[in-house]
Image 1 (cartoon, rainbow, N blue to C red):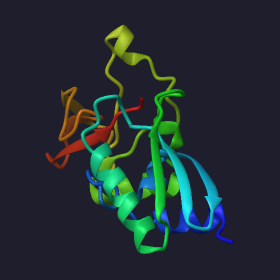
Image 2: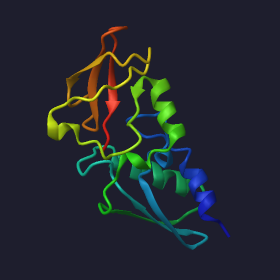
Image 3: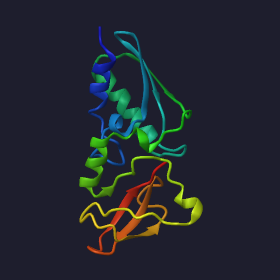
Image 4: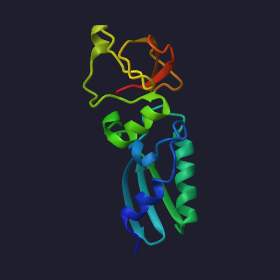
Length: 162
C-alpha cells in the first residue's frame, strides 16, 4: 500500500514551472491527497492566484509523474478556498528563492503597506542591502514585484506576500 508520504516524495520532484529552484510541494500548492486504492489517487491543488498560468503545467506534470509511478486513475481538483498564501512556502524554499536571486516573501501575509502607500524595504537577495526601491508592482510574473538595489544596482524580483 502506498502512503501519502510516498506521494509527497514523488511530487516533491516536480519543479515549479515558473521558479524551477523550488518544487510544487515547497510552493504549497498541493493541498490534499486521497489514495483510493493503490492505482487511484485524488489531489486538491490551489493556484497561487486565480489566473496563474502555471496551473495547467503543474497538472500535466503531476499526471505524468503519477502515471510513471503506476497510477492509472488520477483526479486533480482545483480549489480556491482557502486561498493560497505565501505563508505556505517553507523556510527552506524561501532560502532557495533568495539564492536563486528572488527576494523571498516575508514571514507573514499580514503586511498592509500597500493600503498606506508606504513601500516596505526589501533586502536585495544578492548583496543583502536594505537600500532598495520598488520599480514596478509586477515583475516577471504577477505574483512578484520588481525591485532594484541601490547598492549593487541589480534588479530583482520580490515574491509578494499574498
